Amino acid sequence: MCGIIGFTGKLQAAEILVGGLEQLEYRGYDSAGIAVNENDQTKIVKTTGKVANLREKVSTADDISGTCGIGHTRWATHGGVTDTNAHPHVSGNVTLIHNGIIENYKELAASLKEKGYFAVSETDTEVAAMLIDSLYTGDPFTALREADKILEGAYGFCVMFKDHPGEIYCMRNASPLVASYTEDGAFIASDMVALLKYTKDYFVVPEEHIVVMTQDAITLYTMDEKVEEPKMLHVDWDTTAAQKGGYAYFMQKEIYDQPEALHNTVMPRLHNGHADFSADNISDDIFKGINRVVVTACGTAMHAGLIGRHLIESMLRIPVTVELSSEFRYMNPILDENTLVIVVTQSGETADSLAALRLANERGAKTISIVNVKGSSIARESDYVLYTHAGPEIAVASTKAFSVQCAGMYLIALKLAEINQMMSEEEMADYCAKFEEAIATVEDVLKMDDYIKGIAEKIKDTFSAFYLGRSLDFGIASEGSLKLKEISYVNSEAYNAGELKHGTISLVTEGVPIIAIATQDHVLSKLMANVEEVKARGAHVIMVTDKDMSAYDGIYDDLIQVPEVDDKFGTFGVTVALQLLAYHVTVFRGYDVDQPRNLAKSVTVE
Ligand code: F6R
Image (tube, rainbow, N blue to C red):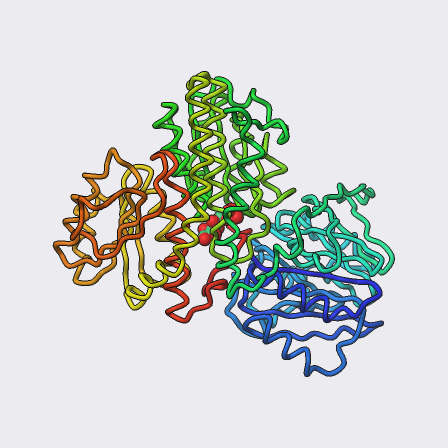
C-alpha cells in the first residue's frame, strides 16, 4: 500500500526512482511522483494515474538531473486522486514521501496552523512534512525523532532536507522499508522488488529506527541515535521471478508458477511420511497440547484458513475458528497457552494481521505464521514461521500465494496429527502420498487453459455470478468468487450451497452463472440437489469438479473436470481452474488484470 523508493549515490536518480516505482506499482496506482535533489535545488515531478504517466512527464520535464532523490506511488487514503495530493510533499526545508496513515493529522494541522503552517493538499502526509519542518533546527535526526514522539498512526518516511543535499533520512514505525548499499550508492524501498536491478542483498529496517543515507554509506540508528549493525538478508529467488517473462500479465504468470511454488513449499517438508519442519527451526513443542486453533488473516489468506479449518476439524477433531484479522483485534478474543494461533499472510505486512498477531502474543497463545515474504514483520514477530516458497507475487490478485498458503495448512495439519498422535504411521504415509499426487495435478489443470477460456467467454458479459460449495468446497468457492469479483468487477458471491434458498436464490434468474464446486463425495448428492434448484430457475451452471459427473448429465451447462484426487486434497486443482476462469473473464471484459481499480497489494493501513 503506497510504494516508496529512495536513492543517493553515483548514478542519476530519476531513472532509478521511476524504474523502481514501476516495480512497486502494485502497491498503489492512484498517482506517482519523484523529487530529485542536486546541490541546493530539489525538482519535483508528480502526476495522477499510473507510473507510465510519471515516466512520460519526467521525460519532458526540464532538467531533472541529480544523484539523490525519492519517489512514491500512491494508494489514496486521505484526499482524492489529484496532482496536489500526490507525493512528494514539501514544507519549508522538508521534502517527504510516506507510506501509512497519520491518525492525528487533524489535531496536528490545527496546532501547526497557529505556527503559520497551511497545507495545500488534503493529505495526512503533508501534515507530517509540516510537523517535521516545524521541529527542524538544523539536525534532521532530532527533528525526526521528535516527530516520532508526536505522530500517531503508521509510517515509513523518506525525507530530504534542503540544507543537507545528497542525503536521505528515513524513519519507520510500522510501514515496511528495506535498504541496501552497493558501490553505486544507497537504496531504500518499501519492497525488495524495486531494488533487484541493483542488488540482491538487503536489510529490513526494524520498526522505530532511522536510516541515514549518504552517497558513501547507509547507517541504521536506533531512536536514541545508537548505530546498529543491520541484519543482512539475501534474495534467493531468481530476479526474473519478478518479471512477466513473456506472459501477458503477472497474474497469468503467477498462475503458471504454481507447480513450482507448490513443489518448493511442500516437497522439502515431506520426509518418509512425516511433516519435517527441521529446516524451518520450528519446534515440535508449539504443536503439543493444543486444544484449539485460531486462524487469523485477511481476504484470500483468510480463505486458506477456511480450508485449514475444514481439514483440521474433520481429520483431527481439534476445534478451529477462522477470524478476519480486522475483527479479531477488536473482539477481545479468548486465548491461552493451549491455543495455536496461525496467521496467514503473503506480504507479512498486512496491518490488521500484524495487530492480530501481536494480540495473540500478548495473550500468551502459541503463534505460527504462514508467510511468503522473508523477514517481514509478521514473520519476525511470530513464535515460528513457516515460509511459503512462492517467490514474489506482483499481481494484486493473489493466486500462487493462496495455493501455497493452503499447502502450509496441509503441512501443519499433518504435523499436529503426528505430535498429538492422531494418525498412525500408515495414515501419515498415505496422507503424504495423496498430498504429493494432488499438487502434481496442477500441471494438468494448466493444460486446460484454452478450454476454460472458452467457458469464460460464455459468461463474460454477466453482471453477477454465484459460487456454491459445501464443506471444504465452500473455502474454494469463496476464493474463486473473490478472484472473479476483484479483477473482473462481476458482482460475485460465494455461498454454502444449502444456504442459497434462504434468501439469495431470489437473485438467480435466466442465464446467471452459478459456479458449483464439487470435490467432496460425502456432500455431492446434496450439492447437486442445490444445483438442480438453480438450474430450474434458468441459471447457467458451470460444474468445477474432480468427480465423474456423468450421473448428473443435463443438470449443468459446462463442466470443468480436473484430475481426480483424494477428497481431502481437492483444493489444489480446482482452485487453479477457478483462477484461470477469473483471469479469462477479465481479459475478455478488457480490464487491467494486474491492477484492478481501488486496490493495492500489501494493505499496511487499518
Ligand atoms: C486478494 C488478495 C487479498 C490479500 C489480503 C491479505 O486477491 O490478495 O485479499 O489476500 O489483502 O494480504 P496478505 O496475504 O499479504 O496478508
